Length: 98
Length: 251
Image 1 (tube, chains in turn purple, brown):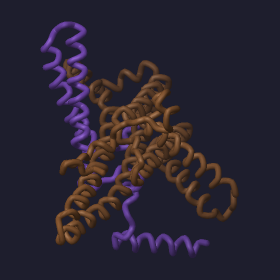
Image 2 (cartoon, one colour):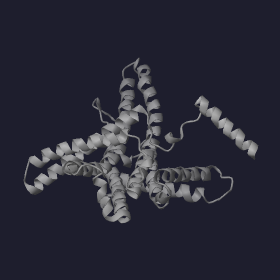
Image 3 (tube, chains in turn cyan, blue):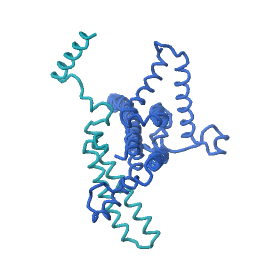
Image 4 (cartoon, helix red, strand yellow):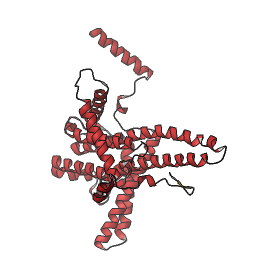
């Protein structure tokens, strides 16, 4: 059994050197093809904008302050879109569990 | 056929009608509902009929059922952690329902229920309500800390909190738009190129030879659409897992 372990270890080391094994981190994550990534980024920004605009619109209709809250929440939505993008690009760390 | 007066009717395929004749018409049973029932039936059949032998060396159907189970089980465990075990039935149902919907929609004359924003948004809303409920029931008041990261200067709170709330609320929207847009775009492209085949084929003697080109594109597109159908179900499921991870661990 020990022999086989050491063989596996050396095999793994050799495969790693040659880059034959995919890194473990890529497994189980989101697909990272350029097209998929671009579409995801677009959808994230767009949806945050939609939510911001809808929220501003609804609050304005409720409080009768058209167009001020709409304008404010338009920019809040844009900022949230950028935040979504930042979350998309920054690697999700499981290490931040405190 | 899609060619009516030389116009391309690419969106007609998403129109809702009633199914099952006069009975369906009187209760408003649409073909979308019909396909939902069909896919639910197929999933049930796959899981129940496939797992009937309970063989140690699985046959084809059992192998399919087991690999679907194992795939989602791995995903939930690796994304959410051990605490995610109890969400497995939810994620599995969601994944299989979307996958079968996308795949069934690729058959000719079939209806794709995942191509309607109301449908995808309702599913995303269920996910959103679940993650909010889980976060609140597990963390109580600490859930509110989600909207204001620790260590940020207090004077930034009026800016950070609305932005974080909007970002949080945008989750179901982005989740539903992604699935919906992918399915609509794929089916529109298929329809447009299929219409080109018919239009070009009618162009006299050379027509059929030119029509081979859009036909070849359509063959490639169908393969691509099968990939997209799987990938979008996968993305929906894994994003659900990521959100569940956030809800369980609060970052």
